[in-house]
Length: 331
Image (cartoon, one colour):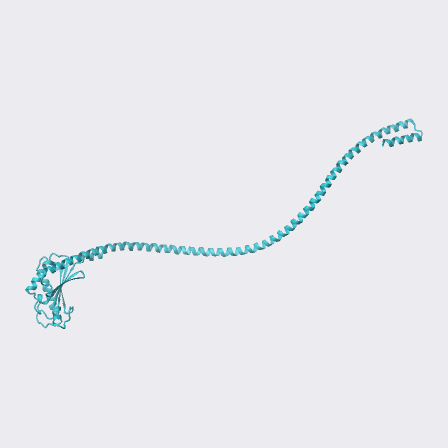
């Protein structure tokens, strides 16, 4: 630029006549122009540096833009992929929502059924519980009755044991009594006399010939001796009952005195034996019973004389008193 101004000045100097004043003015202008030029050059240099910086920045920005464009393209691709994925997920979601709705509807139905079943089960359970309570009450009542029955059974067992002891004691006493009677009447047994132990009792059977004449009720002398020997055995036996029964055959009587028929004869013979026993003061009359059985309890057929002879008899049934046994049963 300076060169250009210098050339212009030289040209102007050579081509025309310039006054000193004009020349000085031109020089001043030239200096001013030089200063301005220097400033401008500095400004231009500063601008060039700025331009270089801007160009570098532009390059960087351009690279950044390119990168951003590449990134944008990638992002667009990613966005597209995401959109596609979103669409797929949306379809899947809709499908799942639809299935879920059906599933929830089904589950709601199942839940309702389960609730109804649960209510029914609970109702049945309450009913069973009530029934169980009733059964428990019945069971408790049965257990109470069972306990009462058990206690009663134990008491009965004790009573049975006591009864058995009493019966055994009575049996032992009866056995001993039979032995004593057999010993007292030794020599007579088998000769119209029989002594049998049966059912806890002693049965003494004396045929008519041992005690009475035919059709009579008075005891003969040998009969009295036999009865007295028997009374000795029975004396002081306070726990015995003595039943004296008169028996006849089936031939009717035609007497006109006290004995009119077989009933009278059987009763009076039994009474005669009882009276003979009471002659022993050690026998309590309250232990004695006289009974007439007439012809109605034969031991053999009345069709033969032998059978009729066997049927005409006195039977003494001696049994232990069972008062203590009856008292035990009544408790």
